[in-house]
Length: 113
Image 1 (cartoon, rainbow, N blue to C red):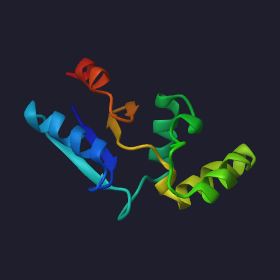
Image 2 (image 1 turned 90 degrees about the vertical axis):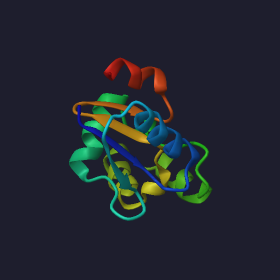
Image 3 (image 1 turned 135 degrees about the vertical axis):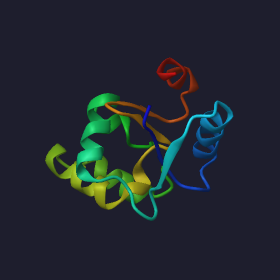
Image 4 (image 1 turned 45 degrees about the vertical axis):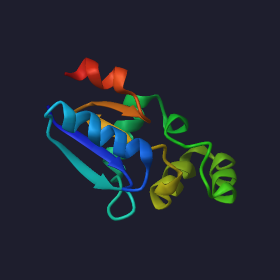
């Protein structure tokens, strides 16, 4: 099992995801979206597993102007804008190889065990 958790240290759902895997003794790699973020390949892999880019965008994002801009861009430009502004992503993004879950979803993670 190769678990990666993408999120920010201050996000409560990201902290709950870390606690979920720690309590079960499962090693994971934490990637801070503010420091490193997702690469284009990782984003596409997560998009494919999660059901597209719209499933990754957080409708409750703090930056409402940026969110409105991204939602009105053509799909070809939307991916690059999200890569440049990863604060728009729902957290945490948890990957297990080709599988991915977006948001706090312990019921999905349990199926990976």
